[in-house]
Image (cartoon, rainbow, N blue to C red):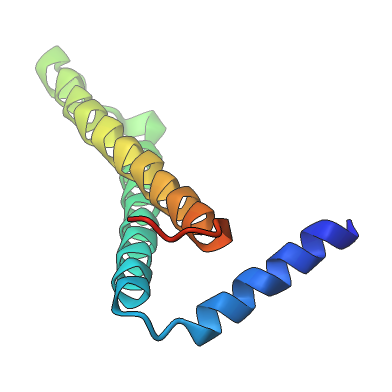
Length: 103
């Protein structure tokens, strides 16, 4: 526990000292990835709430019920955006922890 706490403090110190333009660029990329992930979560939640708000009053015609399948590709790509955003965070933490900052 002590070593993980120590490495976390070292990462925070490196973030605060980051005057390198590469560090600033990576920091802004991580910030954008975090914002995109948050919007993806909000969009998925809102679309699910929209679909399930009135389960008792679902459309009677089969074509209208099948139109809800249009949400599935959108959810897939939003999930992919969340996954890629997490990978950006992992890469940034790995960059901060490594001794050599080769981009």
